[in-house]
Length: 244
Image (cartoon, rainbow, N blue to C red):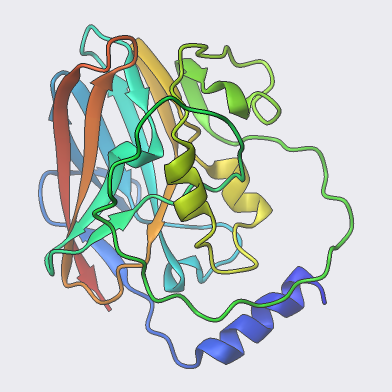
């Protein structure tokens, strides 16, 4: 079965699903026809946009894609790890950022009990192995950015942040919850990689969260930490309403 046929079957299995839209309810700026949510804390600026224009076009029915741009003016090098991104629903539910790449590694870090719950995903769809994909070409925008070492096969040419603490528990817990056949090649190419953002640096890419279709409102929360000392610098909160 091809990936295209897999998506067709997934849509048939899911029935009539209403796609949620995230609309900024706090500070925002216009960019063409898009309205970007904006917030800042501790000298770090964040823009967030829920518009997805890749493959699959109906992605928001299964996960919540958010295009996130961070500009660092904090005077620190920032650590950006998926565990520090989350959506907070008005129901009290925490929605995790899903690691799009299957990684292996080791960490000396103790994994705390998770505050997240698993979203109700659609049934998995078996997909046969298709033709070998073309070489991986990232489509993210970076300036003064270091990727975590385990991304080196995908982000060739970007410097590596060697002092990275690998949280294997988080990756194994949430990477396995992707509804299949996600993530697609588009999603991988556009994903924000984990890493370290230098002072006066910038990074843009998509973070994919668990689906929020039961919520009326959510807040994007990004915990800001120093990449060298792990010092907590602050938290950026960006509010959205969920419309259907």
